[in-house]
Image (cartoon, rainbow, N blue to C red; front, side, top):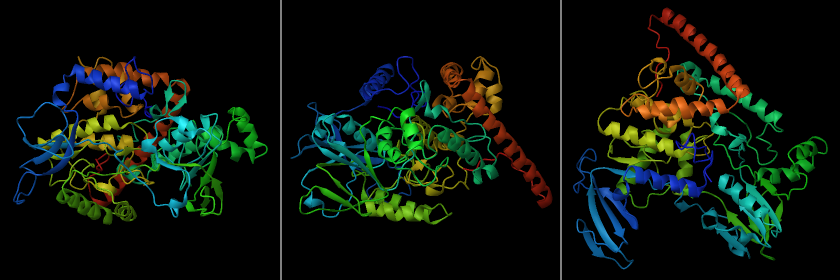
Length: 560
């Protein structure tokens, strides 16, 4: 099911719950195609083989000549407009020319299989999570799940929920921050994030020092502590070293956490057992955890005993590798891939962004790279865009993709006002500081920095201005300031302004804020007030500094 709420995914229709199922999301996409008559633009059963420069001599400074796209067409109907030839693999091989190409192939296409010593000695079943279909495979098995993401947690929960599964364990190399996608009923996690003084109208000094995130960290840690553990929401196992705002991509698949807690809480006679009783975990089937360790070898005598490098062991009949995916664009030409690799090396080495170590990791995993301009394009290839590949810490990828497309089209028209001094790639201001994922970004910061380039970020004056479009200015103001960076907010002004988005903002998104409850809204407003005084103090200090230096203060200038 969807791990981000429908409000942040721009699907806050009454027909959809906060977290739509896969079937409901497919239904939404079908309705979208019907409404905007998009079916005629989509070709199914076509496999892209290559995307390369249309310019044969390669002398062009950019991709003005467009791209030659070769694909294998498995449909029965003929394509008379393309160069065709039958292939041994089946289908018809076609090559067509396109002025623009958007790569939207998704994050999950090439499974990452880690190297495990002596794995050939394992006598059980080994399976990557991409091949998992049904929980019946766990029957009468001892199951070891490798990984720390939401897929690993989902599979571990399905394994332990099978009554005939003998035992379940989770092997986590580093740790994760577990917070459920719904804090309470009708209160999704991603609606507890605000825009004002965190993503917008934040003084560059305050942003550089991460002062707002420091305050948020204190509030988050206090909330988690009151919920039973400061390591995560009711998380006693497999935790990260430090819980900080803006450092981690949150694991929102929480169902397995109670089972992981059981062995750990039982070792704490008073406090652990109290929280087990509070959360109803006393009689749950345990999931054993092997944290901060990796598989060292497989016992060659029985072929089922797995030995970890910390000296512990686990007997397994099945290993599920929920180890994620490699970022791979097998259809891109080597020339394009090399340009992205060179650009990554350049941005990783400068500015202290911390990308150097990640760069070695990327080469080690043999992954392909994204371009540096908001991870959408590189400057040499404005007509080749990569949509939907950034990983938000909290939030959904579809609204980010929509804004990326808006930015790309504006860039093609020459309407992007990119800061010449703005850091790019791994050094961008919106990067997640923990850097577990090389393309992990803070959702709200990314949305605002991209929107600022196309003059689509809301301003306070725009929100307060009453007009035929904005009939409820105070509702619009509060929804933006105290709400999440929902995509309709970036269509209130700018090149894609829409009256419908004003209605959505002052009705559906306003209702999202109201549904949080009075206590939650007061708490978020209190943090915003503290942030206001921090930013005001930074402005006053800047005035004093500029008076001494004879310069003009910039206050809330853009910082890229």
